[in-house]
Image (tube, rainbow over all chains, first blue to last red; front, side):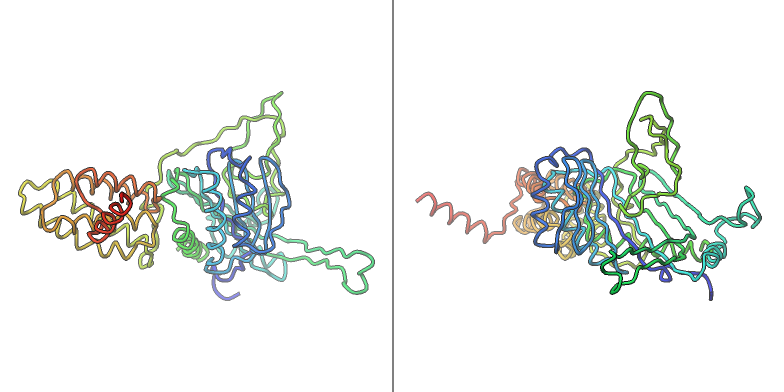
Length: 237
Length: 197
């Protein structure tokens, strides 16, 4: 490996924006209208779970969850500048804020998960240890590995909080094909070794609806995450 | 995970979410590897940092050099509010008017930031028209204080709704300021006359 890892060395995996709000009882009447509002913006909407208190649906743009006290949008292809992500979040959140008459958010969270793939689990662990984020001597602890395989950090004050997690892990990718298709499509059973970078940037203070301009806020916070995480990855700059 | 572990009470049953309460949870990334809390018990101890209102300057803080319309708007609004604050403190009429003239120079810059929100655009346009309609007559202290208060409110909620903006504009009108452009006023009068006929 050449030099310390940077944010750009990680591949975006998922990006989620979540709103939490005081219980919105209008959800019992308006969920269908919210989905109807989104028909113009989203493509191929399919509802995977519809219940009185919780609805989950997906479209080509990502997956959506609507609960009585929270709503979130997750994209599996967020892109680097989050431009499309912001556009889809705006469409979804504008519709639900309007329909559910939400005036205040108790929490706005932005969760960015990225991964860097390695050839072996050892390489992923080594990359994490090489960041020298902990001031601990590399020695066996709890009769376990020399270096931790996961590191978690949280900063929080009365306004904002940030949670950063780094973990060297292995992931199984499995695709079991129905017997009648096995001649055409082979089964897939692959192990991937990754270093996961997981950031949760969230508000602690209450945010009024009229304070939040999503088009400005989201890209700004994605840039902030990028800049700050780069500093952490490069040895606490 | 990093959450305070739940304290369990026998006899109280609730289904726990896999996702800790202070975590933004994408559905496909719930932690499957963390030790699950007991499914008995509802009470848990959490250290609440505070339920304060978000400080707008923290909410939109960005790295220096970042270009953003909302950051520009917040900065200019700050200057505008400071100037109107000074104008209220001045006891010499000519000095007050000089400060108000400096404030008026900021309005075109704020107008350029109107994409921040519909309510934002309405307020800035109304303030601009109100000063135009004064035709050089100095604004009264009540009028200055009202605009100062409205701009302070706008700075705290820059994505102000149209309804909220209309209420604020009504407050301006209540001080004797005319917020409709002169040609709009004439059009309205003609419309009313036609309507009455």
